[in-house]
Image (tube, rainbow, N blue to C red):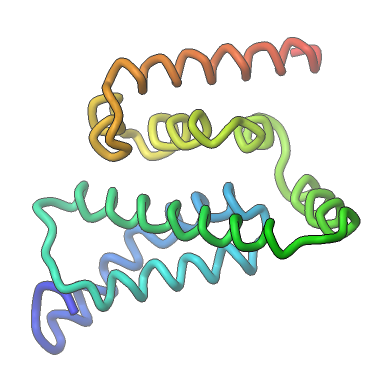
Length: 164
Protein backbone atom coordinates (compact mmCIF):
# COMPACT_ATOMS: atom_id res chain seq x y z
CA UNK A 1 0.00 0.00 0.00
CA UNK A 2 1.19 3.54 -0.61
CA UNK A 3 3.06 6.19 1.37
CA UNK A 4 2.49 5.65 5.11
CA UNK A 5 1.95 2.84 7.59
CA UNK A 6 -1.19 1.90 9.53
CA UNK A 7 -3.56 4.76 10.26
CA UNK A 8 -1.60 7.14 8.06
CA UNK A 9 -2.17 4.89 5.06
CA UNK A 10 -5.86 4.65 5.78
CA UNK A 11 -6.16 8.43 6.18
CA UNK A 12 -4.17 9.03 2.99
CA UNK A 13 -6.36 6.63 1.04
CA UNK A 14 -9.56 8.10 2.48
CA UNK A 15 -8.46 11.65 1.64
CA UNK A 16 -7.52 10.67 -1.90
CA UNK A 17 -10.76 8.77 -2.39
CA UNK A 18 -12.89 11.65 -1.14
CA UNK A 19 -10.95 14.17 -3.22
CA UNK A 20 -11.18 12.32 -6.54
CA UNK A 21 -14.03 9.80 -6.48
CA UNK A 22 -16.54 12.14 -8.16
CA UNK A 23 -14.11 13.11 -10.93
CA UNK A 24 -13.19 9.50 -11.61
CA UNK A 25 -16.85 8.48 -11.58
CA UNK A 26 -17.76 11.17 -14.15
CA UNK A 27 -14.92 10.03 -16.37
CA UNK A 28 -15.97 6.37 -16.11
CA UNK A 29 -19.62 7.22 -16.73
CA UNK A 30 -18.65 9.19 -19.85
CA UNK A 31 -17.09 6.00 -21.22
CA UNK A 32 -19.46 3.35 -19.93
CA UNK A 33 -22.75 5.25 -20.11
CA UNK A 34 -24.26 3.31 -17.24
CA UNK A 35 -23.95 3.67 -13.50
CA UNK A 36 -23.15 0.10 -12.49
CA UNK A 37 -20.21 -0.34 -14.86
CA UNK A 38 -18.91 3.12 -14.00
CA UNK A 39 -19.06 2.32 -10.28
CA UNK A 40 -17.30 -1.01 -10.84
CA UNK A 41 -14.43 0.69 -12.60
CA UNK A 42 -14.20 3.44 -9.98
CA UNK A 43 -13.89 0.77 -7.29
CA UNK A 44 -11.35 -1.15 -9.36
CA UNK A 45 -9.29 2.02 -9.89
CA UNK A 46 -9.22 2.91 -6.20
CA UNK A 47 -8.44 -0.68 -5.27
CA UNK A 48 -5.40 -0.51 -7.58
CA UNK A 49 -4.43 2.77 -5.95
CA UNK A 50 -4.84 1.23 -2.48
CA UNK A 51 -2.43 -1.59 -3.35
CA UNK A 52 -0.04 0.64 -5.28
CA UNK A 53 3.49 0.52 -3.91
CA UNK A 54 4.72 3.98 -4.87
CA UNK A 55 4.50 7.63 -3.99
CA UNK A 56 3.60 10.50 -6.29
CA UNK A 57 5.56 13.69 -6.85
CA UNK A 58 2.44 15.81 -6.45
CA UNK A 59 -1.33 15.68 -6.06
CA UNK A 60 -1.59 16.50 -9.75
CA UNK A 61 0.52 13.46 -10.64
CA UNK A 62 -1.66 11.28 -8.38
CA UNK A 63 -4.84 12.58 -10.01
CA UNK A 64 -3.36 12.01 -13.47
CA UNK A 65 -2.50 8.41 -12.51
CA UNK A 66 -6.08 7.84 -11.34
CA UNK A 67 -7.52 9.32 -14.55
CA UNK A 68 -5.29 7.30 -16.86
CA UNK A 69 -5.85 4.10 -14.85
CA UNK A 70 -9.63 4.57 -14.91
CA UNK A 71 -9.76 5.41 -18.62
CA UNK A 72 -7.64 2.37 -19.47
CA UNK A 73 -9.94 0.16 -17.38
CA UNK A 74 -12.96 1.61 -19.20
CA UNK A 75 -11.41 0.95 -22.59
CA UNK A 76 -10.56 -2.61 -21.57
CA UNK A 77 -14.08 -3.26 -20.31
CA UNK A 78 -15.63 -1.77 -23.44
CA UNK A 79 -13.38 -3.86 -25.66
CA UNK A 80 -14.35 -7.05 -23.84
CA UNK A 81 -17.98 -6.00 -23.61
CA UNK A 82 -18.19 -5.25 -27.32
CA UNK A 83 -16.64 -8.56 -28.26
CA UNK A 84 -19.21 -10.44 -26.15
CA UNK A 85 -22.24 -8.57 -27.52
CA UNK A 86 -24.03 -10.47 -30.23
CA UNK A 87 -27.49 -8.92 -30.27
CA UNK A 88 -28.19 -5.41 -31.56
CA UNK A 89 -31.22 -5.02 -29.31
CA UNK A 90 -29.01 -5.21 -26.19
CA UNK A 91 -26.89 -2.37 -27.52
CA UNK A 92 -29.95 -0.31 -28.44
CA UNK A 93 -31.42 -0.73 -24.95
CA UNK A 94 -28.21 0.47 -23.29
CA UNK A 95 -27.97 3.45 -25.65
CA UNK A 96 -31.57 4.46 -24.92
CA UNK A 97 -30.97 4.25 -21.17
CA UNK A 98 -27.86 6.38 -21.38
CA UNK A 99 -29.47 9.06 -23.53
CA UNK A 100 -32.26 9.47 -21.01
CA UNK A 101 -29.62 10.27 -18.35
CA UNK A 102 -27.35 12.54 -20.38
CA UNK A 103 -28.43 15.57 -22.35
CA UNK A 104 -27.20 18.72 -24.00
CA UNK A 105 -23.56 19.41 -24.49
CA UNK A 106 -22.34 16.42 -22.50
CA UNK A 107 -24.11 14.00 -24.84
CA UNK A 108 -22.41 15.66 -27.80
CA UNK A 109 -19.04 15.38 -26.09
CA UNK A 110 -19.67 11.72 -25.35
CA UNK A 111 -20.30 11.08 -29.04
CA UNK A 112 -16.89 12.42 -30.00
CA UNK A 113 -14.25 9.89 -31.03
CA UNK A 114 -12.08 8.83 -28.08
CA UNK A 115 -9.05 10.88 -29.12
CA UNK A 116 -11.13 14.07 -28.94
CA UNK A 117 -13.38 13.11 -26.03
CA UNK A 118 -10.45 12.43 -23.70
CA UNK A 119 -8.70 15.70 -24.59
CA UNK A 120 -11.91 17.73 -24.14
CA UNK A 121 -12.61 16.04 -20.81
CA UNK A 122 -9.12 16.66 -19.44
CA UNK A 123 -8.99 20.25 -20.70
CA UNK A 124 -12.46 21.54 -19.86
CA UNK A 125 -13.61 19.32 -17.00
CA UNK A 126 -10.35 18.57 -15.21
CA UNK A 127 -8.58 21.87 -15.94
CA UNK A 128 -5.38 20.46 -17.41
CA UNK A 129 -3.52 22.61 -19.93
CA UNK A 130 -2.37 21.32 -23.31
CA UNK A 131 1.19 20.65 -22.09
CA UNK A 132 -0.06 18.56 -19.15
CA UNK A 133 -2.45 16.62 -21.38
CA UNK A 134 0.36 15.98 -23.85
CA UNK A 135 2.46 14.54 -21.03
CA UNK A 136 -0.41 12.38 -19.76
CA UNK A 137 -1.28 10.96 -23.17
CA UNK A 138 2.30 10.79 -24.46
CA UNK A 139 1.50 13.05 -27.43
CA UNK A 140 2.98 16.32 -28.62
CA UNK A 141 1.48 19.55 -27.36
CA UNK A 142 0.62 20.58 -30.94
CA UNK A 143 -1.30 17.31 -31.39
CA UNK A 144 -3.33 18.09 -28.27
CA UNK A 145 -4.09 21.64 -29.46
CA UNK A 146 -5.11 20.29 -32.88
CA UNK A 147 -7.41 17.73 -31.28
CA UNK A 148 -9.02 20.44 -29.14
CA UNK A 149 -9.60 22.60 -32.23
CA UNK A 150 -11.06 19.68 -34.20
CA UNK A 151 -13.30 18.71 -31.28
CA UNK A 152 -14.60 22.28 -31.02
CA UNK A 153 -15.25 22.33 -34.76
CA UNK A 154 -17.18 19.04 -34.57
CA UNK A 155 -19.19 20.25 -31.57
CA UNK A 156 -19.94 23.60 -33.23
CA UNK A 157 -21.16 21.82 -36.38
CA UNK A 158 -23.42 19.51 -34.33
CA UNK A 159 -24.83 22.44 -32.36
CA UNK A 160 -25.57 24.36 -35.56
CA UNK A 161 -27.25 21.26 -37.02
CA UNK A 162 -29.45 21.09 -33.91
CA UNK A 163 -30.40 24.76 -34.29
CA UNK A 164 -28.17 26.34 -31.64
